[in-house]
Image (tube, rainbow, N blue to C red; front, side, top):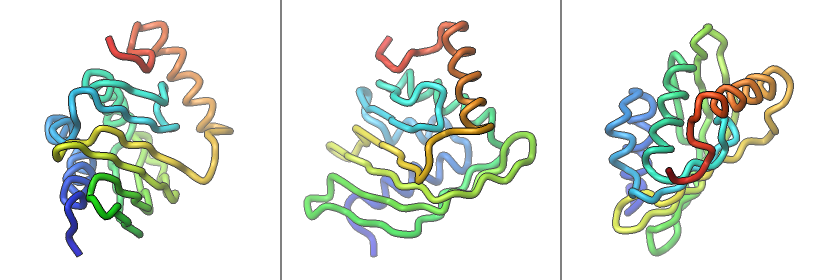
Amino acid sequence: MSTALRPTVERLFSALEAKDLAAALATFADDAVSIDPHYPVSRLEGKAAIAEGLRWAFSTLKTMRFPIVTYCESEDGTHAAVEVATAHVAAAGMHLNFPQAFFIDVHEGLITRVQAYTPYGPNGVGGLFRLLARLQWRLSGKPAGRKR
């Protein structure tokens, strides 16, 4: 069933799967916030920071897939909870399959907040990659999770 917010959510996931930065950014408000434990900086504020985060994700993943398992939306059509069966392939060929939930808020048709939750914390090799990526971002002057 199509609802008020679902087409926006589907456009975002489709753009991510296509690695289409412009299309993904078109779903966000200028002052949007993206919170995701998979990124070197978990909280990205504003389109510039979100764009940098997406460029990083696109460079580290050969493919991205977000098949929707469960979709729930608030009565006013401004908040959604989306469970996905994430199925990515890393640039090195490793298959990354895990459940994930996104909470998405919109205002005037644009995403103002998207927050990802996973059933685990980044530990082991994933935690090491995140730590190394954070260090690399800090050393290269990438956004530190705040507006620039």
